[in-house]
Amino acid sequence: KEALRSGGASRFLLSEAEEDESVWRQPFEQAIRTLARFDLVIPMELLSDYPKPLTDLLGWEKFEKSHVVPSGQVVNNNASSELSNEEYEALWNGNSLDMILYYWTRAVYLTRLHCASILN
Image (cartoon, rainbow, N blue to C red; front, side, top):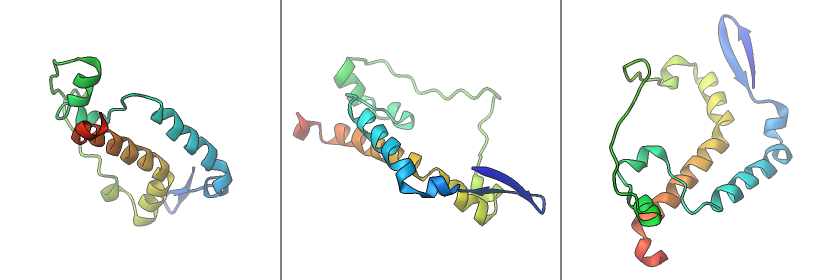
């Protein structure tokens, strides 16, 4: 992504290469294949509330819910309130494949959690 200064505002632009499917398709497919090889991929925000797949697979039973923030406080980093609509859309588009991987991982984890009797 290129950050350009225009009228004092940062602007994020997708490069032509990122818009070209031939550039991102193979690495994205490789990421899916790599994640699919693991017995368990855990979205961290689900681990504390839903540890059963980890317990079933590894036998771990002690889980403590904790949130450590180096600055001592949780800060709401709501990008949509800090960026213009154009900047936010460009940022969202730039992260779209990451979001797809995240939601795919989450779906696999929740399927393992809620459909264990069918999967075994």
